[in-house]
Length: 167
Image (cartoon, rainbow, N blue to C red; front, side):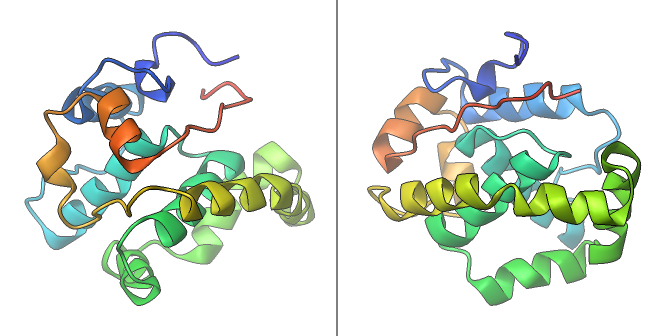
């Protein structure tokens, strides 16, 4: 059960995108800054805004699977640009996988947990492809002062309910 204090996760969230980003960032104080002061922080900001608008929980395999697939299939960022995000921000695949080792009992457990995401991955792709229009990865700032519920309605985003505790 997700705590109700994460209002950005609610489909009908009255928060603006900016308020949702603030709530998201405050919940994960170890996050890199996403203030746009560097190229990497600009990319992190775009990524963090997708977590907010798509209503996903970071730092868990399910939430990141949903967010990555929704970004790839439901935003206007190209696959090449999305891979560029990982290069620019110095995020390595091995580091990400290692970060889940302890929680999932080692590398094999991580890969097992990833395979279990296949059904929700398909749901995510279908929802992304059924959106009214693609999320503007590079121009998401245009929606900062719009209520999340209104933005989600405009784009046809139907949040996939989180099933685990975000902490």
